[in-house]
Image (cartoon, one colour):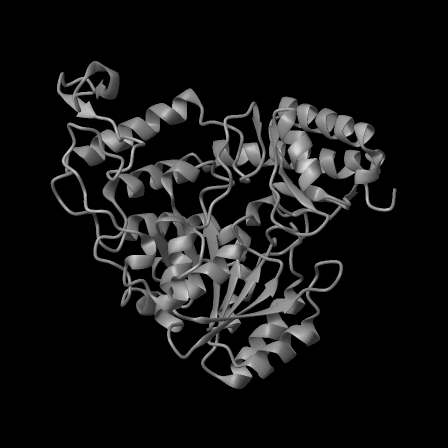
Length: 412
């Protein structure tokens, strides 16, 4: 097949053919291809600590109901799509120039947005933005972790804390949460003193358990971090906007905790997962440190324009949060009627179980066209709060799976 045949090109208005990315690997040659010399991953000079590892990723399957990646199910309105398009078009008029290197206008908008949650005014110098909160976490570990340093987390929690630590050659140390997936403040502080980490990760609301941390846990960890010296405390609030009423943000602690960092994302509440925008709030000195490790012009003009436009439409976008929370609360209330346990949720997802074989339940749901997440947590699965019709499909499918195999419920 010719590289520019009608079967594998698109035309984007200009009349010029653009070759699609082929799913075929270069070493899968045909008689008309220029052959590539064979090579395997094992033959490359890969770092020893990366050998045998698998890349991060949730299953991306073509099913009717996808409830496995904690996405916001509400697509942007036509008005917002138009505004995003205009912002991108304006950015395109200067696409020949590098973007605004420090993204100061975006950071100012983020500071304004976070002020109500913080309870005090934030300044541009206290905000930092990057390509998704994962890049923010990576920059934190590049600045404060690395060879000879340790990062401490409390598992089960967001797996990227561990994976990015390993990718930056930072030793990862995991302490277990309590049986109810909470963190005891005294035990957490003791873990900091024992392990002497350079970075401590706390996730609130926690992924995958959806539980928010009381501020006394964050305070206890910060006190212990100050005692050992040279330790940053990172509170990952990717799902912060979904907290239940009365649950405070760790942002409120920033003025008295100079080594505290609070990270957020626009992927969840802002339904902007496709744009990859993450950010943090911290002391200006922390932002200065990240500027030492960030790549030049790391945040594109288009990303900055889209993020600023979304923030200008925050009221509209955050209006979907209440709808998502309603479906979350519905699941929390409804699943126990099926004999299923749930963990109280402050996020846009629910951890549910206990199952004698969670993989069999996962497969049964998938066979019914519903994809949830199996994180390898024995007995438990995670479901994202989706649209009302999607949650109907999920509940009905789960009911059918359990009716067909009652023994899947632990204790049955």
